[in-house]
Image 1: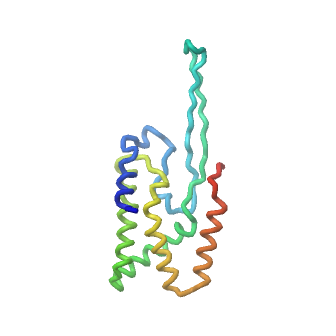
Image 2 (image 1 turned 90 degrees about the horizontal axis):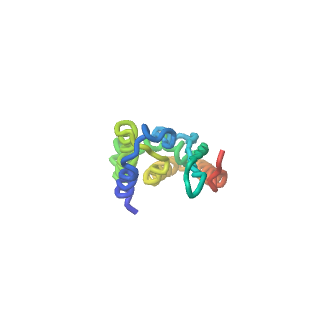
Image 3 (image 1 turned 30 degrees about the horizontal axis):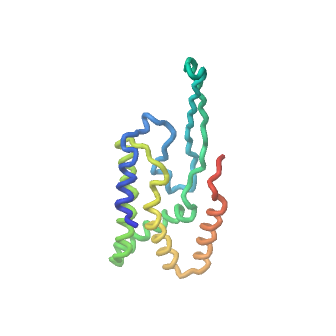
Length: 171
């Protein structure tokens, strides 16, 4: 597992597409760590009537709304745990916290540049390489509190979220 090469591969994926040519297919990186949001995908089917003489074109467009979210406990926890990692780096010079903080920044922040500067289409699955860094940060914060109830609550929310939204469901 190499998060840097995975991020570079995803960064080059669909590099010619931008959101000026494909509206509402994308997902802004701002929303990736929020609990959930709706993403629209447009499917267009073109039927050619009059075979073998294609004299009439009929186009059907269907819009699907997908409920897009990362795992609630992981995403929500990141707003507390990532600043905590930063604190651990400054206060305790902790190398593991520095590693995972840089891991998060180097695999998440490039998508803001791609989306807002390069006008690239981005998808929520581009967050996948970032998840281990966030999970580490969340566990670091929870274990530092030495609170079994908090750990159990975090795990319960994660499992409930998984079972509620698996398999993928349409709205």
